[in-house]
Image 1 (tube, rainbow, N blue to C red):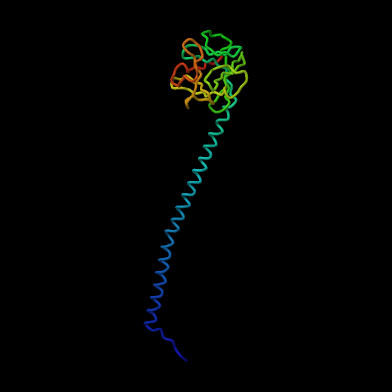
Image 2 (image 1 turned 180 degrees about the vertical axis):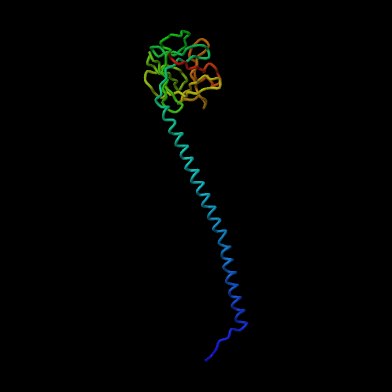
Length: 204
């Protein structure tokens, strides 16, 4: 019967093979580690982006929804000009100013028709405050494009009302009353001109 003997060279070869295999496993393990870390970082970034997108969507949604209450809002006011006149629209649609505090034609209804855009109607005349393409301020019997006015609060706390449709040389045209209470040609008005500034006074 033959007997097998493990020689020193064979034992050495086994040890070398074992060490080589162990070294190979270590190399593979360390090479896979950066990939795993990279994947983990990428997953974390993706999660953050998704969360940020979700938060942004919720914010945008809130802003959009918050505007809905503006449309249809109706306020009864008198518009007291910086020139100390109450803006009035009389029974034939004439727009001018009056110093009389209890003039029934100075009672106005201001209705929001869009975000930042209003329609102003004389309560007793049923005419709308309007500005046409030529810059003429007048009373319109029916609501139309000329009646859409941009309402803005200025730095001095007064309001301005500019045509939402028409501009003169790319500049807004405003409702304004002159020093004698007559309507100004809107083409000659500017936002900084105090003749275009009005203080809305609530009706008791």
